[in-house]
Length: 473
Image 1 (cartoon, rainbow, N blue to C red):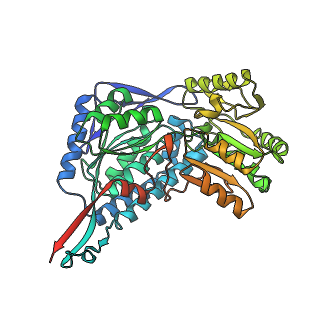
Image 2: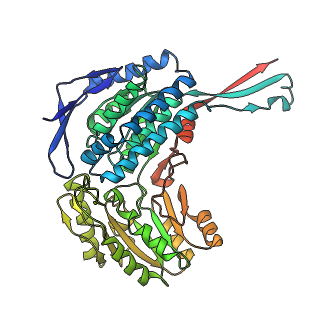
């Protein structure tokens, strides 16, 4: 029997007439249904968030206790939460379990940061005419936060939005991806059990074109935090006007393997990281730049290692790569690869599709204008590109509308320093791929990869306002 899930508004689980099915991404079968929201429920969710906020922010220590309790509950229920991710997102169980444990840590980080929010003293007395004045700043909650999350990390990216928002003293309306709503529902249940009062977190479910638009046009919302495509990000920014937002958008991330790199280490990481979560990671390795002196050897080793990856049922503990989010997305990725091959690219390994399963695919002899290179492929596809010197590698890397993260393998401090200085990205990872992310670190990009930074401490800065206080003594 399929389990039915409700939406969550003002501390109540509400059933609505309209529902949608949630599909097991491997079997293709509907395994659960969720209620969906209408304009009435969306308006009620915003009103509940406003009323809770106006009642006064929770004291910092209370926020800490609630978020810390949620962290413990997530860890206690890790296996069940991971299984949900595996079914609704198609993520292999071992990676889903890692996502759950990361989410627990994000809540704990946010809990600690709730006790550290502070301003600074301003030496206005040093200004002529202000000798008798004293000034400082405090940080205050921004208000009602709308969090719109994607399918690829249905628990951890939700966590990265709502945990800092609550830690900052804000109230939240959450709209998860329609393909993966159950992880968000589970998180609401956990926060309810952890003692979060009614109205502080409200969950609405539905399509972006309908529910998303209603949220964007509701001027009672003060802040938006979104992860998704640049196209949708631009729509959000053009709709919300002067209201603030954090946008974590797309990328076609580069990892550079220089000729002095530890080849075994580089191959070990680069043979897996482009294919984690079937390549559906914002910082996935999409362009792999390899120095020409080691290119041939690296290509052989990379293909050999990537062929060892097991493609199949994500619940099987031996599986390394599960299905993409839908067969339609797998067909799109397949079409991009075929177009590249027809344009002169070569297939080093992979390239075959079976339903939503897509083999880990390595392309060579690609051109800068191919979609697999210049756009975000968001699939288990990586392009090998040779370069002659570091200048050329950096020019290739920067020739993108995106700028999220980059990886650089080198044994030279000078090469690393040069890459750090010149790469146009939000993060540079030395001797690892672009996929590395520490949840406490500032995460975000430049150009069309977005604005603002995630990571609990940094998200709290985004979700609070600085207020100046001046005493005339």
